[in-house]
Image (cartoon, rainbow, N blue to C red; front, side, top):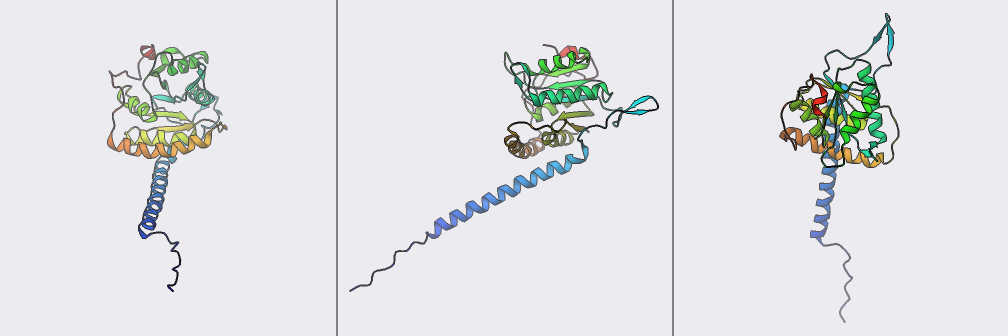
Length: 242
């Protein structure tokens, strides 16, 4: 009588190899993402301030820690809620306006989405600053700042910005400043105050991927969605009114 063979429960070699290849590829992908994020943050970190020093009395005048060479403050869009700034955008606007009033730069550049009828993020941003006492002529609008990269490259190519202060939340600021630096724009970043926002884990995860994407985008010199004639940031911001 023949002996019964034990059933072989081992996986086929090809399946083991396939599984191992996926594991190695996954680890390599994670290391690549982590490495690119560290690269972006390392390159931009020294150019970022959590917040400027509080105005201090100095011989009866206001003291401000930045140089007088900044030509504008770029406030990056963050969406509207019922035609009003979202909480994140409101905090960016407040910080940008406070920097303007402190004398950090003579102009504000509101960069955001106005890519469809009925949604004009930059107009809401400009009106918010006007309501806060900023003269309309000192506020420019970039209607085609559809992404952080497009905001920064259009600031350089359309508005002739050469030395901006960029305002956004800190987790996002590393990428904005890195892009500016990669595009040859010597800029500083000022983070909004450290508030907790709903859905931050998702935004931080998305930002990790976006940093990797924009390393490639800046290296390739990808053109923005829209070009256009130059609008010098040193002029009158009302020329950008729509």
